[in-house]
Length: 152
Image (cartoon, rainbow, N blue to C red; front, side, top):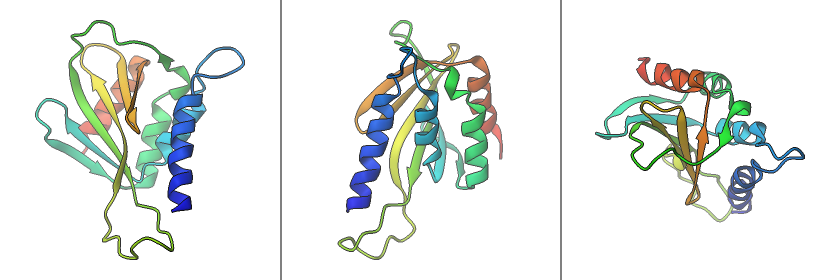
């Protein structure tokens, strides 16, 4: 239980602290570390909910996270209320086993957050622990996510 609580606090702290630095800029490495915690990414069509791809290969997940240029993200509000979600990435990891938890996990994963990609604008939203953050991101990051979703 302690390990699970520490993981939740780490993720929460990483997301909250991402906007704190000595120069008032977002710390992309905190977001990158948090995204790298994912052991599975499920890519879905945001409109239909259809699962397009499910990835558990840690090398492939790390390559995606590296291609996102997280250090170039800017915490920002979505421009307008009519932003149309196109893709949703659900991040998951195995539950932390503790002495007090059931020893059988059955290989299930627990959702740790979601990333929403919007069509026609270079913005994403990240939701974790009930908190939502919007970012303006480089177009290359959007292209990398769309390419990742299209792979089979």
